[in-house]
Amino acid sequence: MALSHDPLWPRAGAWPAPDVLESGERAALALLGVPAWRTSLSPTGAHATPAAVREALRRYSPALVPDRRGTGVETALDADGARVVDAGDLDEPDGPEGEARTITEVARLRGLAEVVLAIGGDNSLTVATALGAWGGALDRAGLVTLDAHYDLREGVSNGSPVRRLIEAGLDPARIVQIGIADFANSAEYARRARELGITVIHRDELHGRVPADVMAEALEIAGAAGGPVHLDLDVDVCDRSVAPGCPASTPGGLAAWELRAFARAAASDPRVVSVDLAEVDATADAPDGRTVRLAALCVLEVLAGVAARPQRG
Image 1: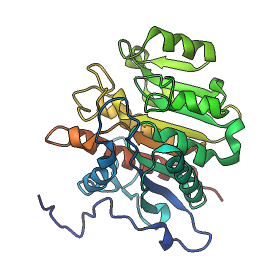
Image 2 (image 1 turned 135 degrees about the horizontal axis):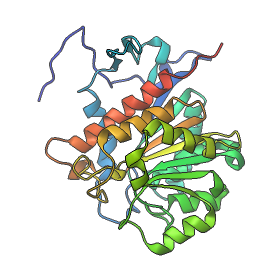
Image 3 (image 1 turned 135 degrees about the vertical axis):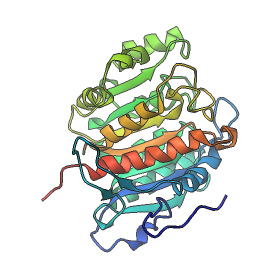
């Protein structure tokens, strides 16, 4: 369906490649498609998702509007003061060679932008995205996940990124997992998380807490060593009614507004240098594309968070 055109209602997306940046100029946000899918534990078409998210972004405006409480002013988030660049998609990011290319490209983009946002792909992309963003600061780095699952499985798959990052040198005391759910994990992996010293904020705890407060607690833990923090937004943390395109989403997960609130709260903190969006299978979405649209809105929430950061100077 063709979208309407209104010069007073510019659409999100269609952002330029990083080569538009002048020497020394930094973008607010750099997008990178990381269509990982080959090691997924369940059949997935997640490699089709970066293109689908970019298309969905065109349905939205990159603008914030004030509310009745008088908070904020109308703001075009992709104006010159908060530029967004899109580095396109990586080719074949799976496997050792693909992950090495991902690490290199994310590290390059970190030199050009405040935050790098990797659009997946399955959850295996978290490993290379985080390592590329952290660079030589792995010994001080932190990780926050929004995920129904621990991702501590053996082997190399979308079920193992947290375990692999720990094995690479990440201190589990600086890992916070938000949204871990009953009936979506084994008792053995729950014990493993506890013995490793990972902070787990169970899904049920979130019913009585404000997302921004939970994220503030998580970032104090993940950023305790003063190093960079990576945020993993695994969309299967959401309720299946809003994320049917996530193979492992279940009834009772987060509401769409909660995921969006967590994304903006995290991105507003300068300790967060990279984000990934994972586990959306665009080929398995509902006819109305609700899962892909939620992922696209999370891109804009991250941009809104970065734009809200205290200005240096």
